[in-house]
Length: 217
Image 1 (cartoon, rainbow, N blue to C red):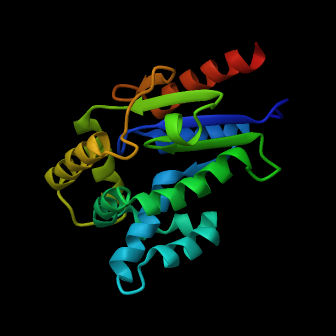
Image 2 (image 1 turned 135 degrees about the vertical axis):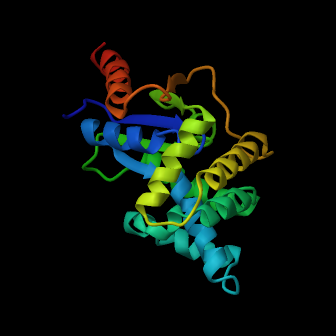
């Protein structure tokens, strides 16, 4: 599918709402460059946990400047410990500036072979791509999200209980919605997609329909 003009898609969502899955499906269908922005914070968090002595803004700046998509595929980044640390370091203004610069570059200057970009995170719709062609806020109820994350972690052979995951999701939500810098919020111009009772395919078809309608107009 070749689009006439490059498009930008911005998605915000709380943890484990299925935004990553939808962003990947949209990106594949419309041939968009996909960036899971939360993974960058998880990468930085993993460095803080595994290399605390090396951790500094200068060191992180060098890492982000050389960042490739392969660096974000590491399974270790999915752990709950890394997620909690990511939530803490994302409140660091200097770290946010470094990550934001990388996100903006990815959104506005994706590799030439793509029809545009699709970014998902917590502040994409109003902070990173305020002029996005499409904005979505993807959510689901807390228990559904905790169950999804629990199954994902179980699939990675992590020893963790459902209650631990539920607690972690609630803690993450509190942090994401209430932080002073770039809190998670639904903007007025974002389309709400609730994935609680819908299959991945049903959600994808709904988003695809919304996008096709505007692209063909």
